[in-house]
Every structure is written in structure tokens, then in C-alpha cells.
Length: 501
Image (cartoon, rainbow, N blue to C red):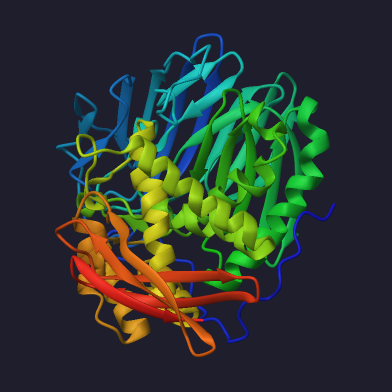
């Protein structure tokens, strides 16, 4: 099934770089490996786990503290098979007797996860619906932030994960799918995550597998039986989106991309996979909106993390590259209408009492935050692309993907990268759009037109409310013979203009 037909946008060779860590520490050479077995009991809403941890470099010290879900009980620890004492308070596990010479640290625990699943989601703006970790009769979702497996700040980890559940329950996490086995009353899922990450999520459901390979990337679709007819469409769309965004942004940063059905209506973008609600999958626009949005998050938000202290730039950039750009490539009129929608949402929802600078946006909890952090930010990237040009814009994004893979980036990092790619100073641009709240208020005044020889002249003034922005305002004159367009540079509160047509 053909979903898209995009022209090639770039002819220059893309920079090639290796797949580096997400959320990696400054010590890039040192990592921990989890060899983890998890048993899931849906009836008891219980997880039972045993984790054998090793280090890539025995000369590096073990972490002093581990984060583990506060719900964890029956914790046991051994070092090379010998029992260790431990302390566990409010989700922090310390092992005071752990020796630097220990080769294998083994931890075992069990935990009860039972966040309630909302029956009605209409009007709930939190995209997680408040669910951080739940084991439910319909399936399992354990977010990375739930600390369902041990993690230590600054210690990125790879993992070999084996998940045992009731027959038919297939588990999904980061990394490559090694296999799924049905053994008696159990189903066993095997995953190998080779990209070091501090934390990772886990999901499970009663799903059926569709799988293929594309350009050395494993493509996995896990849908329920009732949605299985959609699998081929999602595989084809995923192939085309990966081709498009690899050309624009550089190599895809993970070993696999999986589209996984969830048992409640989410739209999560996770490292190398997306988790989409079972009813949401059937909506016709998901293939051309939510799916590319979550694929773009592989680059922004997952491979390149966000320095939230300086503001969340990645939702706006992802919205621009997925929700907007696909319309621009297929239908310019739809692209223009999407830009107008962003402006209408901002004008109708945001006012002086609830506005805030983009630098203060962290995540979406309501429509106002969405209009600013997603919509306004997307328009800022559109204006930046118009200002510096296509080639420097795409070059800057590929450099961002390459230089910050496994790291976090801030708005200031983006400014530095685009200044290098364009050769322009962009301090004023970023200051007025990222650090200032509200938006320019513009009007036309004292307009007049008159005939001069065989042409017509239109004169007037562009007025903006103080404090003024530095803007490039396109003015277009529509005539029976065609349109005449001119860009007016506006820096003051009052700027005269003169157009001839």
C-alpha cells in the first residue's frame, strides 16, 4: 500500500556517524549491562525480577546509589554470589558493602504497579493520562520514570531482557527483538538493547507480530488481532518516513523501530519505538500525523535529549518536521492552512495573563501550553528556516543530530549550531522569539494608492506595538494580472513602505 510519494530533497552526501548513547554520561567508554529476567503476573499486578549487572570496564567503580521503584519489596543483593546488605529508602537503594572488585552484582525484587487507567480521556491534557506504571489485565505499561529496573545517574546501561508472561502476552522494550517463544502457559519475549541508556520503558500486551528489515533497521509491528489488518500499511508508511527523515536529519539512531499497540489511548515516542492506543491506530489520519511525529522523536527527545532547564525545544521542532513539513511536501495550500491554524490557536487561547516565553515551556498540560510549546515553537523554526535558507537549516539539524547524540541540547546549543551552519549572528532572533513572551501586534495605517505613469504605487506604514520586534514582513499585492510580493524589514514601531505594481 503506497502512503506517500516524496521527492528527494537533498542531493549532497549526508554525514555518517555511529549510533551513540541516549542519556549517556560524560564517561562515554564506561557502561553497565543488565541481564534481566522479568516475570509478569497480571492478576496480582505484580512484577518479579532478577538482574545480573556487569561493567564494561572493571576499573571503573560501581555506583554508590541506585534508583528503584519505591514499590519494590523483597529486595535481595549479592556480589559474585555472596549476600550483600542494603538500604532502601524512598526509591533509593544503597549497597555500602559493595566492593570495587565485584564482577557481577545481582539484584532481585518484586513490585506492585497499579496506576488507574482512566475510563474517559476526553478533556485530559496530560498525554500520559496520569499513568506512570500499571500492570493490568489488558496489558502492561511501565514508564522509564517509574524505575521498574535499577538505574544510576551518570551510568548508561545496555540490556538483555527476558520477559515471561501469560501465554499470548508479548513484551516490548528498547533494542532489537531477538525472539518470542510460546512455552506451555507462558510467552517469553527476548530483547537486546545495544544503545546505552540510563532508563528504559517496558510495555506488554496480547499482540501479534509483523516484522521485516529495512536498510539494516528492524521494523516491528505489534497489533492486536482486531487491528492486524492495519499492519502492512504501518510497515510501508514507517519505511517511507524513515527514508525521508534519514535523508533530512542523518542516520536513524536506533537498531529498530516498532509500532506497538497500547491498551489505552496513548501516543508515546520512545527510543526506537512508539506506543499508540488501540482505538487511535484505526483513525485514518494517524498514518500521516502521529506516526511521523513519533518517528521524528527518535532524533529529537530520544537520541538528542532536552535540557529542560533552558526550555523544551523538541516538541516544536518535531511538530514542524512532522505535522507541518509533510503538508508542505504534498500540498502547499494545506501547509499554509496549517500555519494559519497555529496562529488562530495562539490568538484565541493565549493572552497576557497566561502567556510565557518559550524558554519556560517544559511539557504540555493544557491547550495554552500546547499553543505555545508546540505551535509557536514550530512557527519559530519556520521563520528560522526562512531567515537562513534551506541548506543551512538542514545542515544545522544534521549537525545537531550528530554532535548531540546521547547528550542533551538547549536553545543556546541550537543557536550556536545554526549560527555555524548559516554564518549569521542569530542572537536577536533567538532572544526575541525564545526569551520574550507574547507576539508582535501589527497593523497597517495611512495606506493610499495612486497611479504613476503606467504603474500603480501603494504607500503606507506598518505599525507595531512596543517593544518592537525585528521582523521581515511579506506584503503581497493582489491584482487581476497577478500578485506582487515584497519583504519589508521592520525594526521600529513605525515603518513606512512603498510598493509599485
